[in-house]
Amino acid sequence: MGVKETFYISHGSPSLSIDDSIPARHFFKSWKEVFPQRPSPILIISGHWDTAVPTVNVVDLNDIIYDFYGFPKYPAPGAPVLAKRVKELLKASGLRQVDEDKKRGLDHGAWVPLMLMYPEADIPVCQLSVSSHRYGTYHYNLGKALAPLKDEGVLIIGSGSATHNLRAIAPRNTPPDPWALQFDSWLKNSLLDGRYEDVNHYEEKAPHARMAHPWPDHFFPLHVAMGAAGDNAKARVVHDSWDGSSFSYASFGFTSSSS
Picture 1 (cartoon, rainbow, N blue to C red):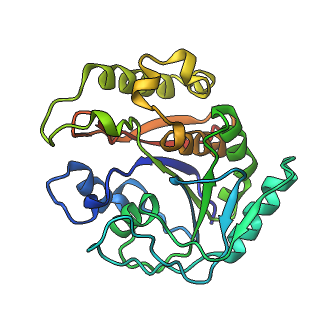
Picture 2 (picture 1 turned 60 degrees about the vertical axis):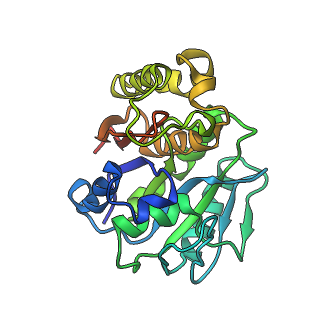
């Protein structure tokens, strides 16, 4: 069965996996209300895997990459057939080089949200990297090349953070900074109005773009999800909360116009 929607989720810190005081945790635990369909495999694009060229992990079983310790395990199966298909589609789009990594598992941009969304850990998962030295339109075109996967039952998820400035983080209940609110509001309005070209060129179009994303690794998964939804896709906000004054957990779904 085909999948009609792609998603961009804001995954936050690894403590999301254990800390019930984080509002977004409850969103991820109720994921099946947002997306009731069970996908066959999942392709997740995480801001925590940054490579010079697009790279997929080709493994039978996903190990967990821990950048913090004492957290739960998430032994999701790998999706090597999907990984090969991703590589095929990207090369067919004109990319000269798409690499395979046969050792890498899932980083916390992947396993933390997935362990709440699909706690059974029984859905195969493939991870695709971002290339932060590139730009928004490049990643949007990556997504466009991957759009056929939806018809093959693949759930495509970009995982990053709608705003991501580690130097500006404050205690949990601190109200959002004005710059973060302004960028977040611009992003929501741009997506809901279908102004995807503005989002592709957010560095010039968005208020406080450099403050919201000093480095673009956590934003580019959004562009992949947008592109994979297809032309004239319709956006919706699936979650909206804040943490630590500078982290927006805003998350979005994208449905193609033909759905």
